[in-house]
Amino acid sequence: MSDKQLRHRDVVRLSRDTYLPRSIARDLPARIAAVLLTAPPGAVVSHLTAATLWGIAVPLQEAEGPVHLTVGTGSAVRARQDRSIHRRTTSDAEVTRTRGFPVTSPERTWRDLAMVLTPPALLAVTDQLLVQRCTVLQLRAQLARHPSGRGSARARAVLPVADPRAESPMESVLRWLLHAAGLPRPVLQHDVRDPSGRFLGRADLAWPDRMVLVEFDGDIHRQRDVFVNDLRRQNQLIAAGWTVLRFTSADVLGRPEEVVAEIRRALRG
Image (cartoon, rainbow, N blue to C red; front, side, top):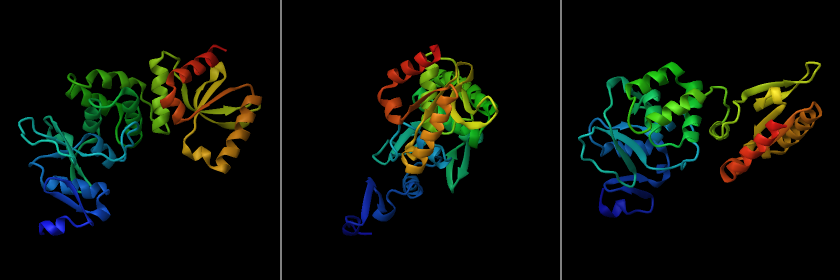
């Protein structure tokens, strides 16, 4: 292609010598393929990009960013606008292929993310991996293979808190806030029934002995039918003697100390 063709409005420049048609410039597999064309031999898709390929949502991160690659420690390749470079050794057991790309295994992806994510985001990743890809034993084994260095303490702190019953990444973020504040560990997805045994609803987080439950309301709860059902359910729960607290991402991210304080007061009765 000529320089004139590359400067066409329908072509997007990702970085030096790397271009894509504008129509697929936001397509992750296309961006990965383009980046790998000029990556050094042995480069492996890793970190946040690997998490996306494994179907893991990482909260508190940009939805679209550079493609993350892990290369050997001796590689001289540099980061560019379209790629973030990580220099670490990887064993054959830690590399597999998915969607046609070389990618770090789910367990290795988790260990890599422990180096770059905050504990709340890492807990959300860990919860999802326990549902979809890994067991606690596999993650412990991965940590044993890389027991020191950046992220090791964070991984050890998060793993005991992880729970496959978590149903959304932001719910996991909220749970870490409560854990870090020293609040009692809640029961996840607790079925609430009245004294006669009639099912009233399922709570995201609950302390049955204190008759307190907490709900995280995502975007779906803004839909009219869901909103109406939520109000009816909340009235039934309050009538049955439960304290009901509901929070959104604006609460969890914008005023976390107040969220913790409200839950603490409710637990104290």
